[in-house]
Figure 1 (cartoon, rainbow, N blue to C red):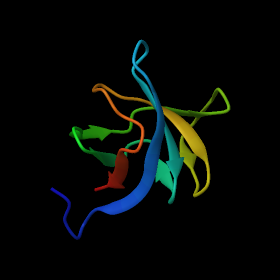
Figure 2 (figure 1 turned 90 degrees about the horizontal axis):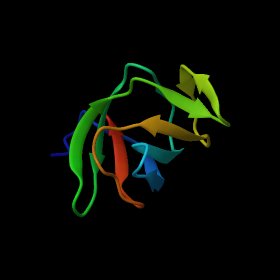
Figure 3 (figure 1 turned 120 degrees about the vertical axis):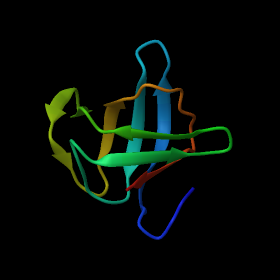
Figure 4 (figure 1 turned 30 degrees about the vertical axis):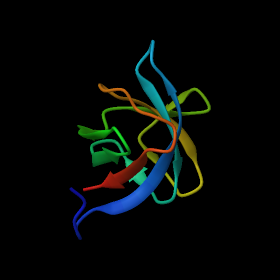
Length: 85
């Protein structure tokens, strides 16, 4: 349910199922606390960004072009798109 208030911020490039982590290539800035919407062929869920890492270091915000790892509660798939609500 994408609407005018959501902004595309990235794409899932990898998902590590055993640890529940999605790697996202950012097309826009993101920060801890942002409400995110993951959408794909069989993915449609919302999460609040609780933590993320860049180069294995915890960060509180990231910018366009960064490739970050974030903890997620549901299965993600490569190619899923990520929106900021």
